[in-house]
Image (tube, rainbow, N blue to C red):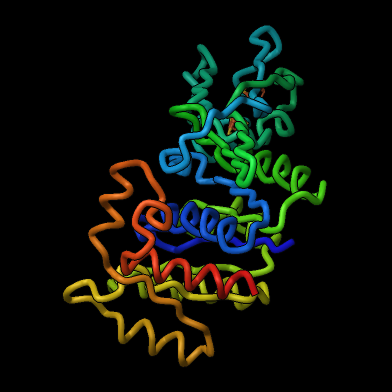
Length: 291
Ligand code: SF4
Ligand code: SF4
């Protein structure tokens, strides 16, 4: 079994479309069963291309402070330690809790000198799953308006790791959110290979440089995917030069309007237009990853 993490420093590079198409391509090419895991919990989109019947398999709960007003001396210590400002003191009057800002860190519980805060729980998201036979999908979904995405990501990855440890999958593909935050690190650590998706823009190059720095520190094998290759005015050559300089393999996925057409129709391009330039490039990448 191989764990492939599809990630990118920058949003909008086409990472999710690539992850779904790779999952479909790997299943078609190898005949092996593929598990696709979507931990872009704030904006999970993998299911738009697979149309699965997802079922909730876990509720994700997080710490929330329960405040006993009769014990609270309104000292303000918890407010000082609450980094996201989810606690607000109205001096001499009341302590307010703003749940939508809370990150569930429990710092308030530990610093309160009066024992006025106890442990409560609130729902922050869900883990959902679907088994489509040749491909399975596990999706983490953050409750709208909540900020505790790390917890949903970690719970989703934990559930997925339990599923892949049962040994029925040949490939696991993890689609992460953009950036290099805490939850992404958890996913990257599980990877046998990381697919670093970028696009031929200056911002794409900058974010690739940052992502490579992190992957290099973690000692992860990496393939750069230059998506939208040939985009007019793009900095393809600079990205290729960067990868060459770092000794990284580059797979190009040509800029192709058919990819968008397939996306709008809710279909993976490798199935709906397998001879299109983007599909041909993705199938080539899948062959490389299957080795
Ligand atoms: S759990 Fe953390 S973020 Fe939430 S109110 Fe307490 S200190 Fe603030
Ligand atoms: S630290 Fe405890 S006593 Fe002080 S304001 Fe917060 S809840 Fe009240």
